[in-house]
Image (cartoon, rainbow, N blue to C red; front, side):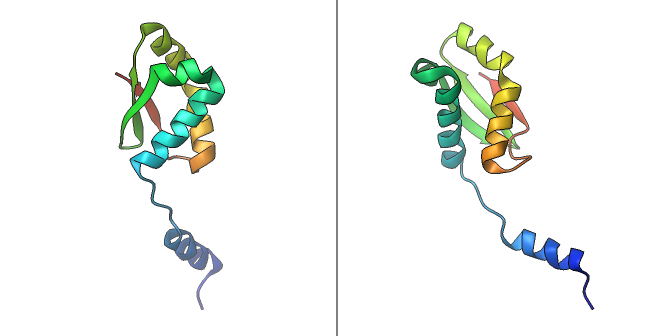
Length: 93
């Protein structure tokens, strides 16, 4: 007889969602617009995603500083959208 834990684990692993970079960038831009408005969204662009780290291209040092100081809040909102543990770090370029 199989345990309930094993059955739930199998079911969880079957229904994993695969996310593309475009999905992550779209949600990132939406979160940035909510936090900083259209001006912030135009100054902060997601460049690429690798190893649970999202790399952000900043077009202004002031906006880079603003994102750096609010990175934990942004990561929490992103992980709320995707599921816990998808985004571990935000790095600035």
